[in-house]
Each structure stands twice: as C-alpha cells, then as structure tokens.
Image 1 (cartoon, rainbow, N blue to C red):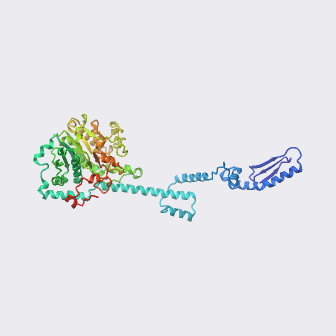
Image 2 (cartoon, rainbow, N blue to C red; image 1 turned 60 degrees about the vertical axis):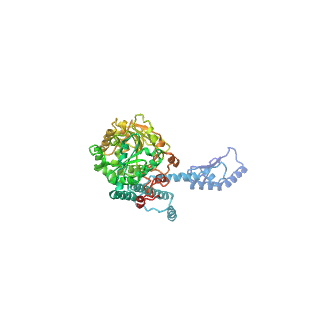
Length: 534
C-alpha cells in the first residue's frame, strides 16, 4: 500500500502495492488548509488504514475469484444483509461441473485398479487425499465397469432364456416317449381316429372345423380340451391335429386314450398327406437343408453380434427370430390349408400356445366380405408392446425390394387364431406369392426379414385380410408379466406367444393358471412323467 501527496499538496492518493487500484483519493481545495482540517484528515486516515490493509490482503488472497476488492471484502466480512446473495455454493457447483466435463472426455486406462464399493472409494479418498478430479475419475471408472457388467449379465440372461424356450421340458419329452411306447403295445391306443362311422364328418361343412399343427402333445391336449369345454355346441366341433412323423404315434395314443366326446378329433402326420411332397414344397426343402439357414437357426447365436451397439430388447427379438421352430415344416403348414383340406370351405387355424375361453361358434358367422383371412390387427390397442406392430417391425426397409413393394406403416395382423375362407383362398395366388418371397429372402441371405413365418405371410395375404374384433384373440401372454388380468378373463382366445410358454420353467406364474386348469394332472401318463400343477 502506498500514500501519494501531490506536489501542490492539493490531493492525497492511497493505492495498492500493485499500483493499479486506487483505493482512495482525496482532493483538497485551492485555498489554504487549516490546521484543524489537516488534523481531522490525518485522524480519519489513521482510522481507515487498518481496514485498507485488510482490504488489500483480501484482494491478494482472492485474486483468482476475479472479484472487486470491495465485493470480496463485503462478502467476507460484511454483514449478512437480506438482499445479499452468497454465491459461494454456486461457484463450487460450477467448478464441480467443470471437473466432470473434463473427466467425461478422458478414457479409462486398461488395468486400472478400482475399489469394489463406494465405501472403499471414500476410504481410499481419505487415505490418499484424492482431489476432486481424481475422485470424479475413479467414480466414472466404477460406473462404467458396473454398466458393462450389468449389460453382460442381461445378455447372458437373454441367452439362457432363449435356450430354455427352445428346449423340450423333461416331462413333455417323457410324455411323448411313454405314449409312443403305448402305441406299439396297446391296441386301444392304435384305434382309428375318428371311428369309421364318423369319417364323413371330417369333410362336412356344417361342422366347425379347427386345424392345429404341433409336435407338443401336452399343448395340443390343452387347446382341444379348452375348446370343447368352452363350446356351447361341442358336438359340432371337429379337430384336425397335424403333427410330424416322430410325434405321430404319441399324439395318436393321447387322443385315442383320452377322447373329448362329443367332439371329433383326427390326428394325422405330415407323412400321411399325399399332396405334401417335396415336389410341391421345394422352397421349404431348401430352407430346411440350406447350410446358411441351419447355421443361422442352430449355430452360435452370439457370434458376429455387436453387443455394444445392440439394446437388450433388440437382442431378445433377434434371438426369438432364431428359434429353430421357424424352419419346421409344421410352422409353414398353414399356407397349404386349401390343398390339405380340399373339401372344406372354412376353418379356424389355432397355434398350440393358445387357450380357448369362450364359445367360438360365432366365428363361422362372421362375414369376411370376400377376404381370405379373418385376423386381429396388431397396430391398435392399449398394450404398446404387443399391439403396436406395423410392417416396419418385421421387415428390413433398407433393402431395395422391401422399400419398393411395402409400406413401413402398414398395419400388421396376428397368427395364432385365424378364420380362413378356403373357397376364397383357392381363387388367389397366396401360396405362390409366399413361395416367391421365401426364395427372394433366401437369395438375399435372410436380409429382408428375420422373424419366422409371419413376414412372408404378411406379404402373401396383402389385400386378403379382414380385421376382426380384438376381443376374439388376446396376444402377449408369453412376452410380459404386466398383462391386464381382467382383459385376459374377457378374451375369447388367449395367446402365450413369446418365450414364456406356460409349460416352461420361465413362464409367468400368475398367467399359468389360465392354461393349467385344462391339464388333467390325474392322468397316469402325466403323473408318471412328473408334470406337476405348480
């Protein structure tokens, strides 16, 4: 601090030692200064000097804060006035944000040793006297590690769920083996289905014909049993159950030993249809035998997948699309219904993961207005996960052929419970269109779509679909456990589409009773295979 007197003694200046801050300047008039005035002036200066010293020290110590001397002094030692705002907390937050932004741009080095918990981090911070930047850097590294481990755990869970969904439960495998053995040793298990006098009813269009294609005996038993028990006219029901060659004996044994009178059940193997030859379905033979296709569905589901750029939801969808069932002939059979049942006019096709809860007779009264396929649309509804499906959810619209021929926002519809007018179908080229697009996707190395048999059907049935009331067919019971129970109770058909089938360990327990109540747990074959109610 310096004190300057002008040569004329007309002004006195007090400045800081830096030489650029004038703390006080006193101008003296041109007339003579009385001794009394000079005395009072010196007295005032003597009183102010201690405060000036303190002020100078504050300026020096807080120069980094870039505040004026009076401002710093006021905030430090001034009174806490109501209108004065203390922004020291705000400055601290701003400094912390600055540190976080700096740390956010830095890469975590490989092999960095990290604390195992937040408590350990705090302890190391105290012991090693970390500064704020080091603390933020370590915290970032711990969070990245946790995110990585959580993501890996989620993908592992999805993989395990996929394998669980694709496998055959021990009890169901046991049931098939025991019933197959029964077919070979028990003449009653081999009896003709239906009995000879009922054979004409298999092509009688005054009856309600259901078609079910499956190799799961327990699931087939539930579908048939629930349909018969829910019907107001069970004597009008005819079930056509189609299965593969290896399951045929066991499936036949079950329905021969457990009749659903008064309904009629026919069991046929794909090998028993004269029309269903390799010559008539060459595309499907190619799909089953193509090495690339088999590797896609049966190979390593993680190889080649960039998990860092994939969300768990997308990964789950891709896994589901790689279920081996999608290259099974049984899954494509519905496209050949007019040829398989040449004498029938109208049928209801059911998937094996549905349960019928209401009489379905009114379905035969629905006027399809010349259309082929009566189905529930899946682009409208309260459930945003299940009922929000459009073509963009199934097709790759970066492919030129898809972009040229399809609209990404066209509404999709559901397989699982469909009314097919076979007379109208026979006048179309639906089967040929289906085959044509299967070939195109095969030649494009599956780049047009990935998910099963629905995408080619969405193309083949374009212009041939008649929407029916969604209350006839409720979807999504195998996808999520947040399904509205009241809506489940009201639906005519509930569909466990998705991985969490009710007969698997990964099922949703609160949704299983709607299915399990149609399982006869007192049956000897079911008991001996330890298929339990819970």
